Image 1 (cartoon, helix red, strand yellow):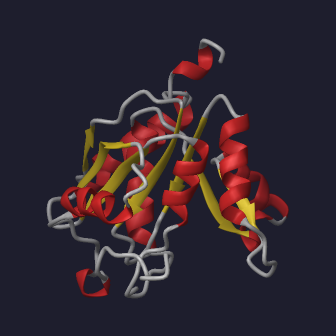
Image 2 (cartoon, one colour):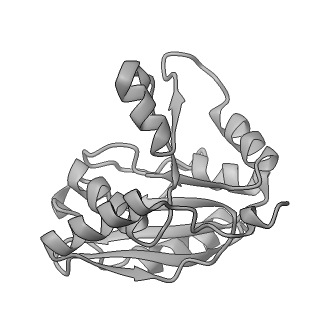
Length: 200
């Protein structure tokens, strides 16, 4: 692993300035407790509107982090694709039945530096269950799961240290619940329970 890859603070003057300026203009603050792990899965919640994602993105930019994130293929066409990739985007073709978990885990293992941001709710509408893909990606890639939260009432975006998945999903879910307890998105009525489908 290269010396450069040992830090996650790879942002440039543009992204740092953009994030800092937008947060200052809107009155948001950042709690940055993220370890300097060069490879990680960072789960983001709650996700009730695109505004949640916007403030979280500005928060990570402001502290010098450019995360990788998974987006639908339509976001990567033409000039928009250039911008999306420049901002860390990884396109996924949802029309094909591919093993995205194994593909993403393999990509992380092959990379010196990858911060894969995932919203486990997978929708801005209320979800009864979280998707467990993030957990399996981290387990297969042998990387930690860290946390990124939004709390609209306090206008706070937080980056919090997490853990390596133990394999005991229910015990690890309890740790995740403690981190996100009391955090609210813009539309809290759209927030569902933090749980996986029993089949997972």
